[in-house]
Image (cartoon, rainbow, N blue to C red; front, side, top):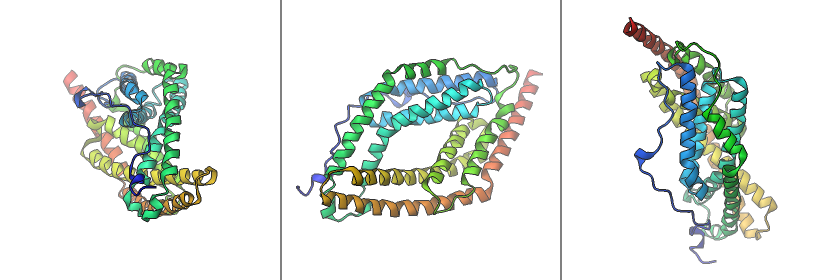
Length: 337
């Protein structure tokens, strides 16, 4: 194999990106404190639906960034479902939870191929030059898997199941609520179960905890983060500080999860592939390097979480949401009077 062969992308060329200006992109889901809760729930779901549809076409073509943004839009939509779970009709909540999970998992498999390849090309893993030269079969296997997973994405978009999900997002049944019940009034109660789930997920976190525990905390933090972002007016100054800390921790947990996924994939490759022994040895070296990275990230993420937990910033932010909600209600009352 020639010396520079490993540096060349083995993946299939990605279709050109669909051009769109930054201003043309759909806005994130945003919730107004003075909006009736039922109306806010419907608007949040419709806004999330618009964003999914926006990224559907470029994601179909295999555009990497579009697939990533489609997944992010799906996560934000799932966070909106959890935020308004007490407002949306129970059967529809269960349906949306199940189907949006399916959507994310289908799109996620292709994205994980890209992340795994990017990790394995990272110079910081410091494999010796001879080992690097034997990585071609590994990248070829990843490329094949990416094509297979992308075909599943295309099938997903073409399926009746996907169309049904889009239709039901556009017309979610809302529980009967007085139009005078606004977001600012119910916000504390809507935020509380999401915040509690974060605290419970991190309660027993230690550097040596299983990867599943780190991943669970990451998922719960995403939901809380997106809930705060949807309600910027209520979250306030303290909320913005908390949000920054949550984003930093989410990034650490994301890098940890990426390492875990890459290790699992390499282990499957090593146990099922007919690659030559030198390639299997290179895979083993990568696994060791990634495992060391995973351990370091586990230590950093645990320390960061414990610092957040001890500072009670999540509880304080919930208290601020409640105070800002009360101020919003008082202001509305004065204006009406």
